[in-house]
Image 1 (tube, rainbow, N blue to C red):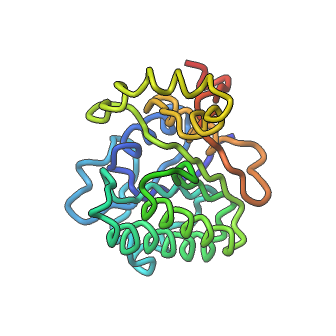
Image 2: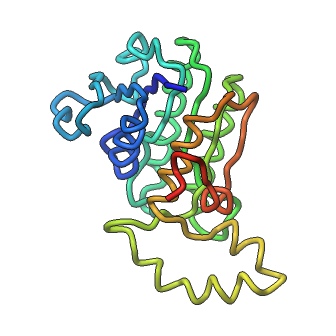
Length: 223
């Protein structure tokens, strides 16, 4: 079924890979960008000029989207960016939820983070608060919870794979190792595309954890 998709964060690490996939499968994609950033948007997507931190700047342009994909967030998160997690991550979700609700969007798709985890507590807290905003809105939503997405420029955790192998086989650490496992950029794109194409969309909030992200297989995204 063809979707009309509105995306925030479409020029980011995940967004600029997701958009071509959605377009290739016949979906209409409109993406929020700041003025001057239109050239960074993948070809085929329509640019909507606005500010992700000000819903009034783009809310009237969300319709007729039936699906809203929110990908805005602080890049390369670390402890030093704790304040940004609140002023960017949480704030942008609040604005996106307001815009999506007002536009009557049927399905809200959000990339959160695996939780709980023994590190990155401020980041987890911000993402958990963002999830709570989505739940409180009453929107039907899919929330994906990766831990780390391996891809170009984001490959250093590969050195941890032997540790994941060990911890995944110990009863005491198996669940944590699976929940905080690594996913590839390709797996993430497949899972997001499958979420967009879910028919019918979820009723309520659906959580997609690392094992499910890795296992996503559909007729269109089997590779």
